[in-house]
Each structure stands twice: as C-alpha cells, then as structure tokens.
Image 1 (cartoon, rainbow, N blue to C red):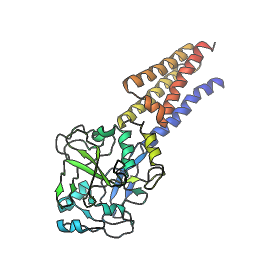
Image 2: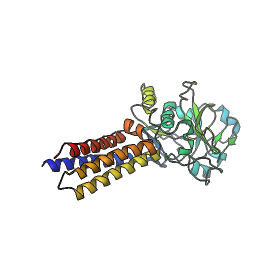
Image 3: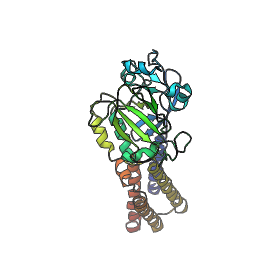
Image 4: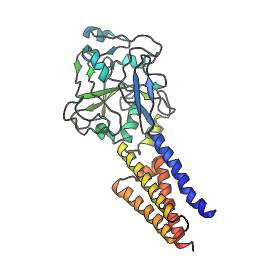
Length: 336
C-alpha cells in the first residue's frame, strides 16, 4: 500500500496540473446586441475581445448615430460612430470608430458583462507582457492589413491588433494600415481621469504607448471582461496593478511551461513503467536528476523563475520539481 500511495501522489498532482493547463487555454464567444460575434483571449488576469467593436446600438437597443459630415462631428456632444472613410467595408475588417461620448453613455456600449478598458486595464496587460516594448506581441502578424514592415509583430499574446486608423476632430481619417488606436476611458497616467489612447505602430520603436486625446476624435474600441478588481469604479485598481507588475511572462513563456509539464510527466511515466515494483536507488537517482536538471534548465534557458513564484500553474510545477528532488534524496539516502 505504501508503494502505491507514493506512486499515486505525483499522478494525482499531474492530473490537477493538466486540468489547470487546459483551463488556461479556454476562451468564450461573445455576441453584441447587433449579432456581431467576438472571440476572446486571456492575457494575464484580463479577458479581452480579439476583434474591434462593431456595434451600432447601445445595450438597450437605442441606435448610435453614424456621423459622416465633418462639420457635424465637432457639434456632437453625444455618442456617435464612424466607419473609416465612411466605408462600411472597412468596418467589417477593422470595426467601427467611436467618440468619447459613446464610451460614457449610460446605455452601455460593450455587451453585458464587458466594459471599455481603463488605464489600469491597459497597464496590467502591458506589464504582463513586456511593458512598452510589448506592441509586437499584440499586433497581427504579416502585411495583409499592416503596412510593411510591421516591425516586431509576433502576436504571441493573441490580441491580434489591426491598424484601423482613427478620425481627427476636424473630420479627417488618418493612418489606416499604419496604426491601431484604442480608447482608454481613463488614461491611468499623469492625466489622471482624462481619456487616453493606446497605440500600436507599424514601424517599431515604442510601439505600445499612451497619449492624451480629444473627446471629439474617434478611435477603435476593444472591450474587456468585467471582474471584481479592474471594472470601472473599483477601488482595487492600484492593488491589481501592483500584483501584476511582476507577471512579465509572454504567451511564449506560457507555452514553455506547458512543455515542462509534459517532460515531467514523461519522465515519471518512464519511472513508473520500468521501476514500478521497487524503490531502488535508480528511481531516486532518476527523480533527483530530473528535478535538478529541469529546475536549472528552466531558469537558465527560459528565465522562468518569476513563473514559479507568481503564477498558480508555475507554483504547482515548482512544487512538483521540489517533490522530485526531495523524494529522490529520500529514496537514495534513507530507504534501504
């Protein structure tokens, strides 16, 4: 019975680990009031829509005015939307452009359970990736929609930003293909509660940054899912930002940790098959060596120490590595 329990423990742990692994990949489908369908992606603790908002009605069914005239644009003190160059074909690909009044309208622009991102929402996502250099991780790859060279684009986060351009307060449309500009309902910077715009550019540099904007200009919208920490009006925004500042792992790092999981599983399956009837020093040496090698390699080549310390899945993997090392020592030096 004792041997069975010793072998059962790691496999139960791995079952829990694999369930967590699979749950991290789950996304959902969201439909707005017009029937437009959006996919989602989890980046750190936030769930983002993968497509730009296309809705032409508020949540209660009221229409959002479509303003095409340049003079009328500046007169508006209510929510409006635009299609780039007043061409509905652009909205199919890039979504629609909205002014600030549409964001703050109490009738609601995003679907139920979703909201316009705040400065802290963007900041948490930025820091979860690689700070201001994370633009490449958020841009769609290739030059189908982005103008060449679309520098550093990997889309490793899955955010799939498209360069939908924007509309100036004088009515001119600018920079489709060159930049993706997204509303932030607050800037989250030294402008405090003023609206801001987060931009990703085609040509590299600091390709993910914040800037102050006019409330009459029109930008793309990406909705983010409500949660208890970062929804508008929450008093816990600063706490969440501080917690997430250390989580600088990209989507590629997440893949690497998953590879580690399967390597660990394979090593212990091998041990279970070939040495299941004994607790010889061979088993101890195998587990001790595998635990040490995986720990050293993980930190030397993949820089995954922050994952082991800060991410729930990483903590479980770190505990299992420790288990391998301790159990290896136990078998070699204590068991007869």
